[in-house]
Image (cartoon, rainbow, N blue to C red):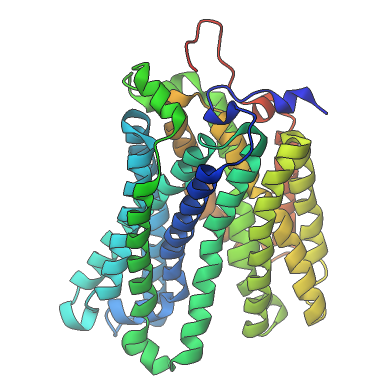
Length: 444
């Protein structure tokens, strides 16, 4: 077994070789539940974008203009991620992981609840889309802090032998928010007519998300601060210079590493999970119901894959997991997109298979958390991840949409290229062993 991939994680509370205990399971379950609800709150907007567009913009606008403005408000959430992520992470490194971990879900739950209660354009005019935009910006800031915060919080609690499994399980909970949003959308369209949804039922998913999010805020009060931050506070090392300044000056390599892995992650999620249903319908005339059914199955295998690849990294090492996981994503992307449209059963099976390998996205936090020292870990991960996601997550749909007009295999080419990049990153020593303290460092 490659010893490089099993070097002790400097500064992580999980460096103790012990089994998972009751407190670990409580931390993991409450963190994953909160991540599921928070990500659901963030993505449920897109499932009802058409209804929202018709209600929050002037009725005299052309349909394409309303759709464009609605998607622009959705995109505003992504643009706010870097700012919110860095701010929340900054105070997470200075004041404590738990406080910011709880704040992030509160900042998501309240705007979601407000969206469910907002008056429409018919009631308050131009104030309606402005308030909607404001709520999306706050949601974007919250999600920017939630994901890196959750990864750091769980990683600093988990024992070393189950480090990857803990992060993979947490990531599966976060991706499960997409599946939950899809299920709510299917349920709503099954039980209510189009007129009922337009008139009032569209509010239900937002009200549910807001209420359950506030419940999760309450439950997180039972979590404990991470041992790593407690140790930093005792040593009075948390009160140093601006964490972001330290990251930019001393940890550029780690930032580049996380940014490149975020490119891989954003491609996998945006193209395979979010973009593909419309790709199936537009180019191959696959019925919408079948496209959404196969997408739901792939989301389930993605969720399971997050757990598996995190667990596999504990057993076989980070390098092996990255090569097999993201290398497998490259191969199965061609297997899936190259066989379209195929039979319905084959479509479901191949989409499920590529979804499983997309689950290797859980390797990003496995690598990213330990790439930074404890004093700036939250800030470093959040800065690199959210900045890269804002860039690549925004450009990828446009690039693939244009590319597929000249090559039906464009999604396969792009996903496969990113899979190969992820596999190659596995040979970067920093990705395998993480940050290492110098002899003069007093970091725990």
